[in-house]
Image (cartoon, rainbow, N blue to C red; front, side):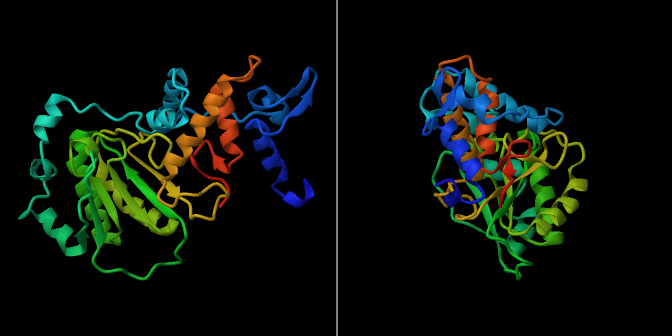
Length: 308
């Protein structure tokens, strides 16, 4: 059976043991889940390096989730996904009561030079009626892809909300001068208070790198917010990146509409909850969740696929 499972059999078997589907025989009988952690991982994945602000945010999000008395994986994943979102205070709601006020705040209303650049290079997509309204834009001219990938690469630009107008102008300028690409930014108070308030999409890593090179010099003195579970491009969490793998690139990618960060926090939530039910003291629950996630082909130091 193990031979038929191919070269990934050890990783697959380890995942089945940590998920409680298979058991291993130890000194005190058969064990699985977190109780079998030390038998599966002789050398555990180290806890996240905390040298960068994004890494600290990701670790803080997991510690926050681990402390919550929630045993429903979906609810716990949602708490991690929303971690570091700022509250919609009365002050923010009064400043940004509607789309018109938001456009004025962002300095992209009709007649401004920035709106002229947007309209020249992009088409605004129809608004989606959700609490987190987005202003989404697609290029008017679809230039030929340069070695396109089935994956979608994302750049997150995460300024403090007060600095969102300057950051959006910098993103638009860098894209217009370099290569217009699809992007979105917060179109209302709730989306501008999210960490991932500005997202730019690419089909190749080279396009992503060219954009970042053009963008970074335009972001001087902007205060960062920071997107947990993304990979650093700056040390202050102002710019980071992620990738949504194609449907077939990882065995557990089932929902084409599910973003990478949603996938990551969903799997972390299940692992954290599973570790709570260990019969023994077991490993640190966060360490167990990181180790379990690494078996799914996720680099838990950068939150990107380690196997594509």
